[in-house]
Amino acid sequence: MALDLTSLLEGGVLLPVSDASSRKQIITQLSEALADKSGLDARDIQDAVMERERLGSTGVGEGVAIPHARLDGLEAPIGGFARLSQAVDFEAIDERPCDLIFMLLAPLSAGADHLRALAQVSRAFRQASVREALRKADTEDGIRAILCRSDASNAA
Image 1 (cartoon, rainbow, N blue to C red):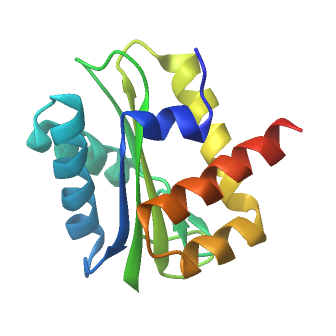
Image 2: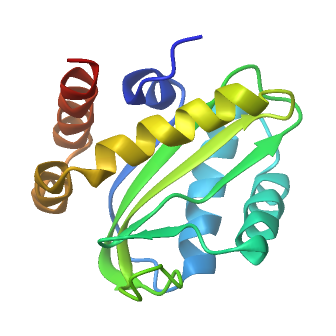
């Protein structure tokens, strides 16, 4: 199973600029958008992701959060990306608010694949050049190009 960002976003969503003003609000927006793409119920997605958030923050630092959950009814991992116009508190490890949000959903049975997908997303967002470029991008095509380039550099 291919687990690069390009494949995660093929069935996923991109929100170039979101005006969400809280962690719950951006999780709700991404849940609704991913529900439209996946056929899953938006409330089920939101509940699973919020349950994971209660276990520990998914704010990984440098303004990045990677909320995630495993759900029944998915065939393969999918992702949704949003850039916030105003950073929100995700209780990140560096205590900085987050403006780059990548939500990852994986099938309930995809333990190892889920971890590999999380690692792939994390590698991409660890690159300062990727974060900087995403903060400047304001179109889906621009964001997709940046994330695809980060895939290529991670594979090299």
